[in-house]
Length: 325
Image 1 (cartoon, one colour):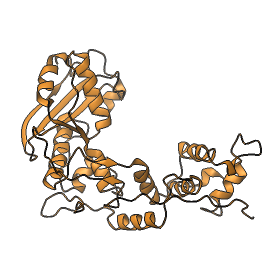
Image 2: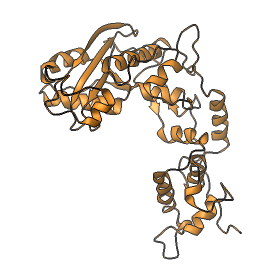
Image 3: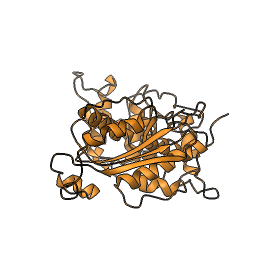
Image 4: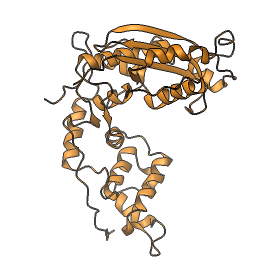
């Protein structure tokens, strides 16, 4: 079969001083009031509407030393769905004698006010806490915030076991949570990760996370079958390349797209037969100006492969990449 379509031009690979999916900023100006590390257990996964059933706040001084802790159960003033209980183990009976969030709100705002707010999953915990404080008529806007999960993903994108808190802690030479999805235990580990960043001269709020690069790197080592959403994305990307449309210019021509895909896997007969590495490579062939990877990207992948599973402690201390001078 002859491929009549010219190969789309690949964009230059994204680069940065560390050769990682993002960057870890140097701690040039320590946060004067320190940090408030939080973790929440909730009634669900919607920050706009779900309620807190347990919280933990651990304060760190500008040098990363723990100074104060507050944690407890909360009456969400609504039934806890069984699906949420299956995650964190907190039942309606356990919070029956707990106080509602509004009774904790002023104390929580006092603790976190003026401090950099850190969470392991900041995109969930911080908006949910902000919404609960507003609901209790104690509005609060963080002076700055950071995501410990993104920092770990940037530093060790190819970690074998992934980046859940229970896996990230031992990878960094730290003790993992006593119990997954326990607010106090999780906040303690998130605080330990944050403190380790501070000791290494990394600013916990200055992480820049490149999601496209991160998922591309993760896909390079995956032989798992491509998922339906990944296949749909392949077609969505192809719609923006006029060379892959039908004669009417309205729909993706499956045969043309298959020709491109066969540059990745010459034997493939169906899009469903692609693995995650192959479908990511197909994205890069089609997506002009997108997160395509050139020789520089290959070099980056080689460097990261050498670090796969890295994180062994130096004399019990967490290992973070050295920041560029």
